[in-house]
Image 1 (cartoon, rainbow, N blue to C red):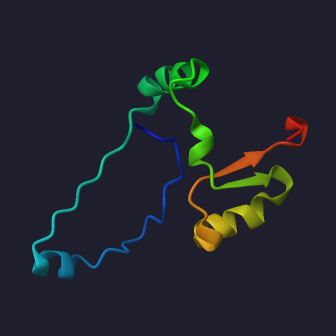
Image 2 (image 1 turned 135 degrees about the horizontal axis):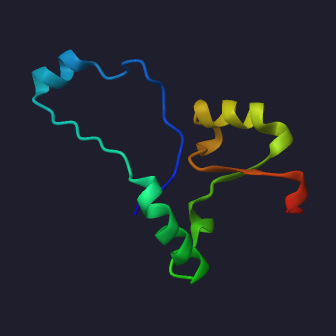
Image 3 (image 1 turned 90 degrees about the vertical axis):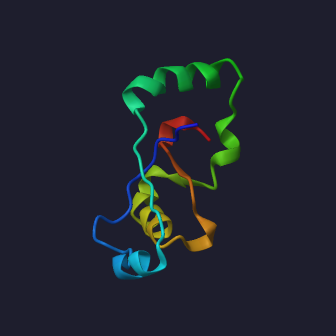
Length: 90
């Protein structure tokens, strides 16, 4: 399953020398969001997938700066935050 998310830091946080010395393999890829998103939305609408279980934090839009700080620092086990607009009434 593909999940739309936020990219992490772009600087090199992986110690490449250690990776080479240990013979590790690193794999990475990007989801084809434009192609898969309509099918993902259809699955959610039809009840095939329930994304509520993925959400770890609900953050009011007016608290976005603090929410991003929590997400970026992985505080409070923040893995998948969702921003809630004031008009959502949640």
